[in-house]
Length: 189
Image (cartoon, rainbow, N blue to C red; front, side, top):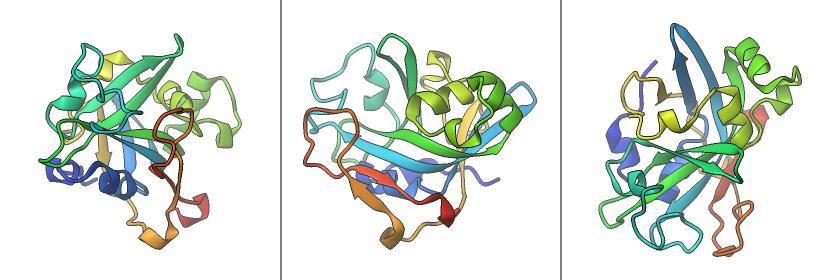
């Protein structure tokens, strides 16, 4: 497994969001590895009204302003965690890519127990589902994705831009004109 280097994340957030498609998110719990292939992402930049970073640094979002290649995990709707990869170029103050969906790869039995469902297609097909399946919580916020820590991203399949579907981001009311939700069909994996 080749872990993506920090330079991968030190680029435009939208480019990173597209290039994460086909890569593999790995969660290490003790000696167990649980993983999935990233098939849906969303980009959020500092000048984007839909981004947590738009109004400046807070206790919740401060990792978005820090070093690229770190995780930004937040709690939403009083019940769910979402995981992001901090990614931005030198012109941006903050940026992150929300990991929205995975195809389960390793540790599927673990994911089934975490999600309490045996329906494979329903294990990691949403941002809250994938964090639950991989047991990602606020404890992973600030984790370095570029090192073999409890959460990291490795090389996978390179996806052609022509195979990526771009659309409005899901569940937001601001900046809906930005087509920064990116996905690929499962058949490509």
